[in-house]
Structures are given as C-alpha cells and as structure tokens.
Amino acid sequence: MNRADIRMLSVTAATVALLGGCQQYGQPTMEPGPVETEPVETEPAPERAPAPEPANATDRRIHDEVHAALRRAPDIDASQLRVVVDQRVVRISGAADSLAAKDRIHAVAHSVSGVESVIVDDVEVSY
Image 1 (cartoon, one colour):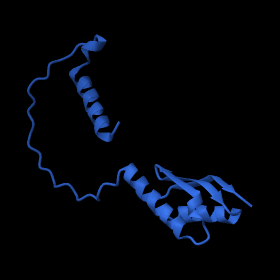
Image 2 (cartoon, one colour):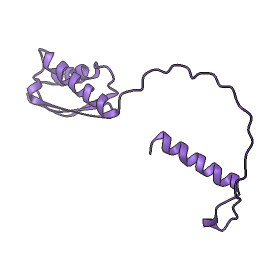
Image 3 (cartoon, helix red, strand yellow):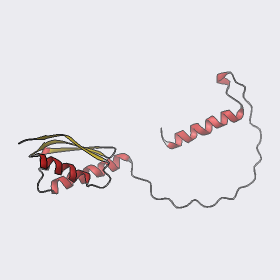
Image 4 (cartoon, helix red, strand yellow):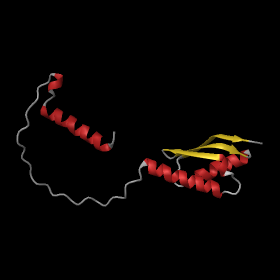
C-alpha cells in the first residue's frame, strides 16, 4: 500500500465519521448537503528535490557499482563472487583466498554509495 492509498483511506474514514456512521455497521448515515466555502489563497508549492529512484533501480545501480568495484580491486577475484542486492543490503557469496580477502570484499562493497549494509557470511575462505 502506498502513501496515496493511505491518504485515500484516511479521507474515506474521515468522511464516514463526518457523515455520522456507515449503514454496513448499523449506524445511521446522513446525506451531505451543500457546503459553502470561502475562496482560500494558496502559495505556490516550494520546489521539491527530485523523487528518489525506485528501490529496484537503486538496487540495480548498487549491484552494478559493487560488482565493478570488486572487479577493479587487484587483490579480489571477483569471478568467484556473486552479488545480490535487496533494499540496499548487499549480500555476497562465493569464495575468497583468505580472511583478509573476505574482509577486503566487505570493505569494497561497503564503500559504494547508497549501500546500507553488507553481508559476506556466505563467502567461503579457501586456505
């Protein structure tokens, strides 16, 4: 459910309460009559920052950037790694040559902009 749906539900609930109930629940309803309102002067809305990317576009960008960063790192064999991103959480699985390499994989992935956290528990260390 998005924010527009929540707002619509809130307006609907407020309307039902204002009209005095709902026939579905055995409460009386009132028919709305004409409502007189005075014109209201409004100021133009302030300019807003651009909307954030949808989660899947952000996740896709993070995936591409993490994978590229791992490939660029000379001490990491990125061909042995699989990167999955879900809601800005990066999960890496595969193989590393050492514990130091596993720590480096974590650090490289975490350095990418937008990454909330990195999970490397599924990276096996081969000695």
